[in-house]
Image 1 (tube, rainbow, N blue to C red):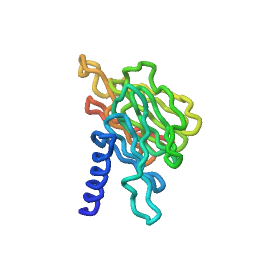
Image 2 (spheres, rainbow, N blue to C red):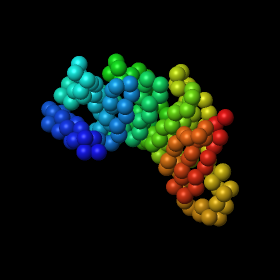
Image 3 (tube, rainbow, N blue to C red):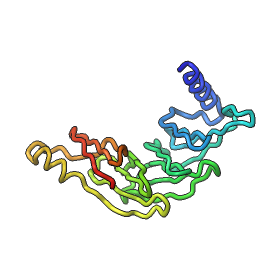
Image 4 (spheres, helix red, strand yellow):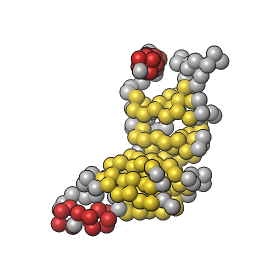
Length: 195
């Protein structure tokens, strides 16, 4: 574990000592020998290995997801691309080419925030901050396929009287064992079969 800690310290030093004066790291994703680091200022730092096989911490690429700057809230690897949740949009990044391949609105309200992403097969499930609706997008065409509102299921489990004035919001999302696992701010976990 000391080796991993040293690598993170090296990465931290490389980013903080750069002329860009970057902020905190929020997320890391590895895809086919490339590491993407989501930074608090809405920038992705993309790292490659050098010819010697070691991580090149000095020649990284910065990819700005736009203005005004906000945090990148979530990332997931989808085949050889990385989907990033940034404000109300999803950015599909091609790590090898170090460019944004596609961006699209996940929610019409600009003040909304994409919070969780979960990839399974040809679909990517998306949750929005303070929202009870899951959105499904095609992993290749980026087409919106389906909405699933989990509020009725949570109300049925807890009873409408127990919800009171609290609203149902999705706080966790994961795919495991051919099921979509959805955690809510009400303490309810919903497991949806995907077959």
